[in-house]
Length: 193
Image (cartoon, rainbow, N blue to C red; front, side, top):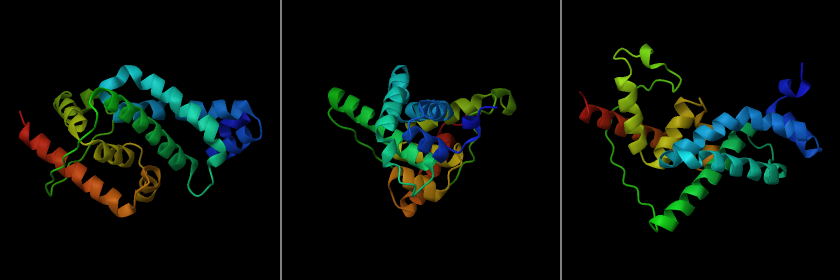
């Protein structure tokens, strides 16, 4: 069995910094799908560019690996780096096309339980319609709210890990999660069949 495959992310990063390119390849393999999904979450209308964004994420990881200080887990640090990279791409795109991005948030005091993204449509009682409605509603969420919700519900990160990766206080994460769930509940109530 490959020893690198059994090593922790932090150990692989240390091996890479010591000159082991296979360790970097192992890390990239572990996080490629997560980086791709994050690129799509942040840039859903630009799925064709998601692979380019992922490539940029790993270029930045390669260049800034030495900046990992161990103050958080590698996973948290990686999501921060990936988030910034995907947001930089988004800002660059929107500045070139529209000049700016504006976000308006309304909230209500209700919650909505979300299925995992891997849930098969046939596992849903209505054959997938609810999943389609949820996906459409998720796409309408402001980016900061959507990203916080994705990291919490689908990546199962703690409030602290999300706060570290998004460079915001834990209270802000809690607020964003509350607002995201309330907005989703409102949108799903409005669009009931």
